[in-house]
Amino acid sequence: MRTGATFRLSGDHGGSAALVTRLLDLEPSCAFEVGDPVGRRSGAVRRVSLWLLSPDLPPGSELSDHLHWLLDKLEPKADTVWRLTGQGYVADWFCLAASRVTEHAIVLDRPLLRRILALPGDLLLDVMGDDD
Image (tube, rainbow, N blue to C red):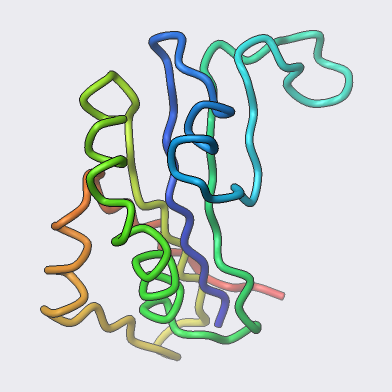
């Protein structure tokens, strides 16, 4: 079973990832600015800034563990996250669940969902098979 979750803030309105880092006082797992190259050889540049926060949890951790980790970091900053979305940043919770057929159930209980709902952003679930 492979799982992961990333809280993402994108600034397609000209906002910067550096501003998100400064206002949240959290180091992102990864950040990109408008104008940064996309890939190594394509010649394309980013049209939006992107600020990503992902847990560094052991392989096989439950998806809910990833989300709880993110919430523990972001809930104390909820007012700032809401302010950023009010300024035009787009938030989402991008989640991965990759499993062999009938191997595992993902549990997102009501208390966890309530915590997610207290912050901005849609919950995106990428569910797929895990073929080695």
